[in-house]
Image 1 (cartoon, protein in one colour):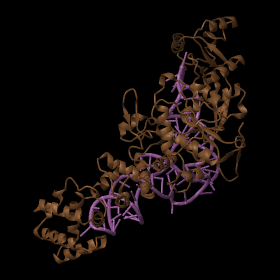
Image 2 (cartoon, rainbow, N blue to C red):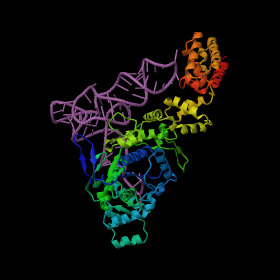
Image 3 (cartoon, rainbow, N blue to C red):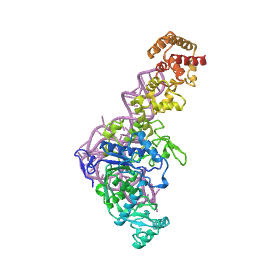
Image 4 (cartoon, rainbow, N blue to C red):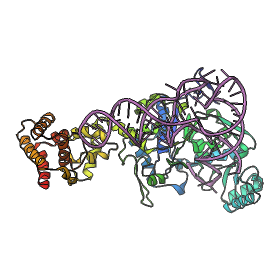
Length: 528
RNA sequence: GCCGCGUUGGUCAAGGGGUUAAGACGCCUCCCUUUCACGGAGGAAUCACGGGUUCGAAUCCCGUACGUGGUACCA
């Protein structure tokens, strides 16, 4: 199976060779049941990084085998999220590929064929038990004080399945169209082990594994069968998935063995979970509402209930930041670096350095990443996003040059893209309300005089730039024997409406002479 | 209950036998800025607990506790 070679002196790092001779192929295999959650995107990311790092392919496969949980629109939504993140699959239902179809519902017959093969080879069997019969079996186990309510080697010879029935009987039931499932036949007391790329050796005893259903009564495969068949057929070399799959890994390994494909089994990597910030359990969509932060990549509206769950995108996150924060939630390269571009991640990502333990999600830190990316990126990267934000509020940006200047001026104080609105509206529209109460208490005749004088001087200014504005302001202040400090706050409030915003003279220089004078006059009249 | 996986400050974490136990977020103090940010300087950990092994353990071993996942004809 896996050949590992540990380089001397590099403890904990191991290099996997067995599957490296083939072209690397990884897949993200979501089921279209709703919004794409943080943990899901991180799984995509790690898949993607690994594939691109090794010049491999990244495949999107839709696992829509549970018809009862299928949600209209969820597949397209997942594709949209991947697009927003810039994580483009090389193959998938939307782009096609050599191994199509990429929707499991369209591959139904394949699974049936392999399930039948397993039965034929004695690795699986038909089970005709009704839900009631199974419940009765479990009830009996409960009564006997057993805690494992498994359909396994302890009980399978007491159930209605092809293991106990005469072949002719089985055939008769089959011919009569009796509903059945196909279950894997797990031999007791064998130790199954494998090398997880993240955790190293993991062991299970088959004693604790039940005869999982492989093919459901509706003819659809369960995840267990489908994932093995498809990973094999699609030539997947490395399989990354959430840690919640670890307990079923032995079933999958058994299947790889029983189907005769064990030499081609992918390397496994079970990713740590992303947990609730306040403890107790893995992060779920409900936590977002409860704790006030997004858990989905993009807005998701449940088509049945109409309920909207917010996404990182709409709340003002940059995809660069979103990917960055997800990448380092459970991984780091051992240096102090925290800000990584996608290209840097492709270069530096290493699966052996992924943590073993789950990490609690910290929204404050998430916002910090966004802030860093806003500061880092040129404003041209998000001008269109911000201008549509303005449009939503009924403000149309016409002066593109001024707009860019403004964004440049305020970007350091914006954590989310949505912050740009309140940080810069006053450059385009005079403030609706002025925090006059913050001026009044210290207002006096002399200050009133100062501002009257200031207006006159500003009106006479030949040039309208930051320095002239500030110098003129200071000269007049000195003439009135006033400190500039006690004058700047009132001016700020006159111009922006409150105690916020960038440097006052920067603001004045951008909004222009006419507007500056007008705003001062307006407040002055209210004060006077 | 059973099985698996885990456990370094509030959170993310470096570190893998000898270190003053990095760094980041958040918090607090100060500087810069007469707004707020940005930027800068500081402050806060007996490495879950108990036993070993060792001259020496956050680092290795065992146990306990706690957390987390699975235990479906869901993925």
